[in-house]
Length: 113
Length: 111
Image 1 (cartoon, rainbow over the protein chains, first blue to last red):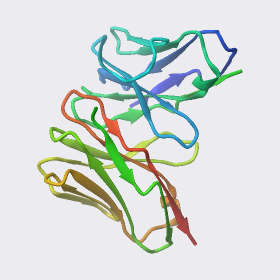
Image 2 (image 1 turned 180 degrees about the horizontal axis):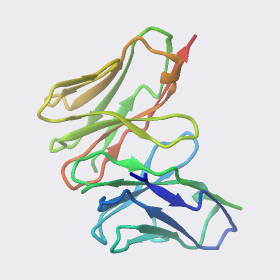
Image 3 (image 1 turned 60 degrees about the vertical axis):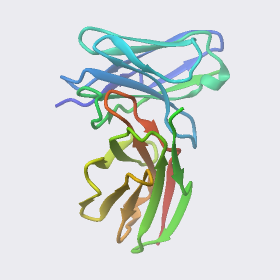
Image 4 (image 1 turned 90 degrees about the horizontal axis):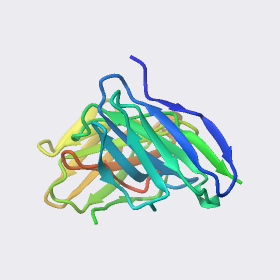
């Protein structure tokens, strides 16, 4: 069974640009969550999508948005990038999101210059 | 809002000794408590989890205990080995809600 796949693995963007990150969950998983992780920091929850609907949302500004497609693949978009957005962005999938194991992708490392 | 406090932030133990990491949660409706291990440069991976109807769970050298009354749960690692060095995260959730994460504990195993 293929794991969670995130693309691209690395990105360098300029301040003010926008970026789209992609996450393909494990086949059959309907829940996808996104996290931001900065060096030495924990996992900051961005949002969770379940069956194409945003089910839970963290405390990030509106510049951070996401969506989920009918095949459960999810994208995350960050507009008007700031230097502080430089981080590792992780997505995690789970079968239903109802209190079950979350499987993480390898992450996309975003650098904003 | 709901939160999970994790202590200590850094733990250094001698190889072969035991390590204990503690987490306290605020949402009394939480019913799922996983522990994840993140090695340097790698993704977090589940190492053990426990549900609210169980008080303790063991898997070889790893165990988790849950005290629902006090709203805290702990990870116990016995006979620590160099490969146990990593950052450990606890989390708590209720059904259909997102996991609420602790801040992480950096475990250092001294040879």
